[in-house]
Image (tube, rainbow, N blue to C red; front, side, top):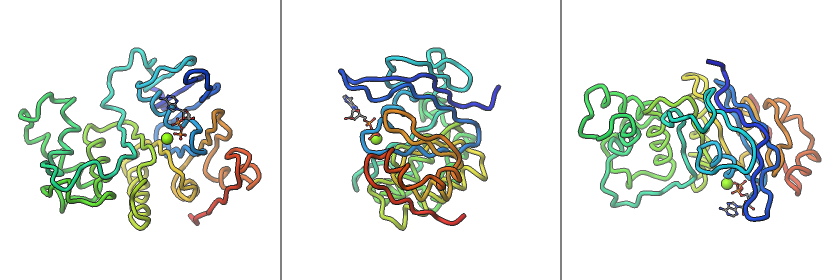
Length: 251
Ligand SMILES: Nc1ncnc2c1ncn2[C@@H]1O[C@H](COP(=O)(O)OP(=O)(O)O)[C@@H](O)[C@H]1O
Ligand SMILES: [Mg+2]
């Protein structure tokens, strides 16, 4: 098996007549923490939907774990966390443990067949996002940031090769955002989890991401985080179409 997790070649896509992605190439290698940035409407979510097999692009090819997407079936290997924080209301009748268990259902069919091994996998995933103390709380009683951690745990329980997050910190207050990024950093460095993170927070890019791509219909930049932080303000403004201030965090 090669060390390429995702490979996109010549991806183009239009909605109606509007071209949204134009000849995009992208390669995500094992162990990368890739940040995907770009202006609103730049095509980030469209690209994620294409990688997840939810949208078929007009042109181009997609390889996932060395297989053409048309032949790829092992979707357990690709975890996804969306931007919808606070999905569960206060009264939602499920515990954290039950929500994380849902991440296993594709593997084991029905929850009633959960054995000891499955249960310890669920608890391990909850522990890996630092939420052990909340395992038997009701999910609706957690804050938005805590719920997002639980969604990560749900994605991790099937031991994915890649975790994709599309603006996961929208609606999370800023102190928890920092902790959330630290968790991603830990998963990347300690558990060698490969990550693709869509975010508006350019600070994350210089502090935690190993690689950065800027997307605005075209892939405008593709490099490591050092090269990204060296980009001039003018170069970034050209990509975004308006002035951008990059906040550089120290390593
Ligand atoms: N289902 C859709 N139908 C038509 N247009 C869409 C659809 N989804 C997205 N778009 C348009 O495609 C462009 C890219 O959107 P999107 O991929 O969501 O960008 P981003 O995630 O970078 O903000 C936007 O102009 C958006 O309005
Ligand atoms: Mg989006």
